[in-house]
Amino acid sequence: MKVVVIGAGIIGLLTALRLKQQGVDVVVLEKGKVAQESSWAGAGILCPIHPWLYPDSFTDLVNASLDLYPDLQAELEAETGHDIQRIKSGLLIPCFADDKVKHQEDAQTWSDKFAWDMQRLTPTQAVEKEPTLSAHVVEALLWSDVYQVRNPELLRAVLLYLRKLGVDVIEDCEVSQLLEDKASNICGVKTVQSETYAADAVLLAAGSWSANLTQQSGFKLPVQPVKGQIVLLKTKPNTLKHIIKHDDAYFVPRKDGRILVGATMENVGFERSNTVEALDELLAATQKLVPGLKDAQVEQQWVGFRPGSPDGLPFLGKMPSKKGLWVATGHYRNGVALAPITAKVMADWICGAQPSLNMDAFSPNRPMKESIFVGYPKEQ
Ligand SMILES: Cc1cc2nc3c(=O)[nH]c(=O)nc-3n(C[C@H](O)[C@H](O)[C@H](O)COP(=O)(O)OP(=O)(O)OC[C@H]3O[C@@H](n4cnc5c(N)ncnc54)[C@H](O)[C@@H]3O)c2cc1C
Image (cartoon, rainbow, N blue to C red; front, side, top):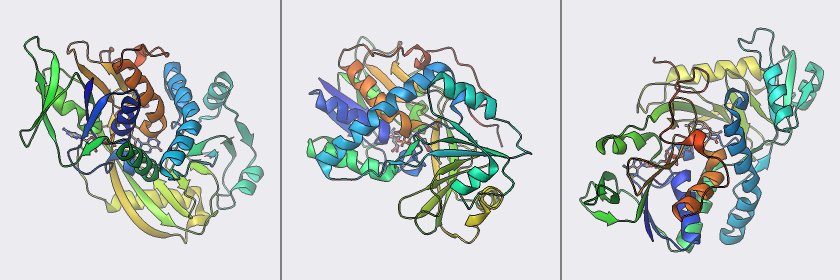
């Protein structure tokens, strides 16, 4: 069996790995350079932002994915010697008297329902855990079992493993067309260089760009880029211990002392510039939430495009209207967390096995409901 994967982000690469391990002849085609888009830019928090805003089927998918991470980490380390820096940082949500949305009760209900251990901390306990935190905190929610991964390192390890297994990942190779046979089934792809790649199945894992190709083939997949800007601060290791998350911003402390401050949510298409407004916004949030970081030096700022979907859920499965075409895209804010289960489900499915989870909620053909809480942000 031959499969073409379109897109070398975490979704395309990890699925290609799982396909290869099942004996599939797989090639990955990438329009730019490998692993440089959303999967590189993201923060690597292995827990959705406010998971209680999503349907239960989403939490089931997340839990199944997070369960696969320890084995994935061990496998990548054994096969490549590469440390993906998956660390149990814990996640702390500080609450303030003037918060626009009070998350406490929904967070508690969700945590109880899905057996995620959550503690409610007094202001004194919160500041004891994180001394750089604002003194104006009125309460804090703590999930001690939340992990992060350093996503560029994860991508590097997956790529090394793919190369070891002899999988071709071809850069500067933009797919411009899905090819159809006489029965109108998808039978391969054509690139902008006019090369063709024949395939028994094509997996569309093109992140924010996924809608372009489906549109040409006459069907709609409503994936839209949601621009996110991140600012990188340089501090000493352990200045911050936990991932801190608030509606205004989140803070992800890396092992080497760097702290990611993210991220804007912008509905501006593929506009790639780093803006002063975003820098100011994220630094103002730092000042308010963790004023103890005020002397940290700004080292870098970058942009990524989350593959957004109207309801915030990914599109996973086959396109009912096009035999031979599979999609794994629209992972929005959660693609790094969801990559292990996406890769497993998609590889098994393409190879003929039914997924063990109910995937109806993620069908590319599902009735689409826009969610003001988790879907696309408002137009700017
Ligand atoms: C600022 C920010 C913070 C985030 N934080 C987190 C987080 O903390 N936790 C989490 O789980 N997720 C997070 N995410 C989301 C996560 O990064 C994405 O959901 C995930 O990376 C999507 O992976 P992907 O492989 O689908 O897309 P991408 O990584 O964007 O990869 C798609 C690839 O397809 C290629 N491509 C597109 N069109 C074509 C074509 N026609 N031919 C060939 N190649 C093509 C692109 O060049 C790209 O390399 C964040 C994202 C951003 C931007």
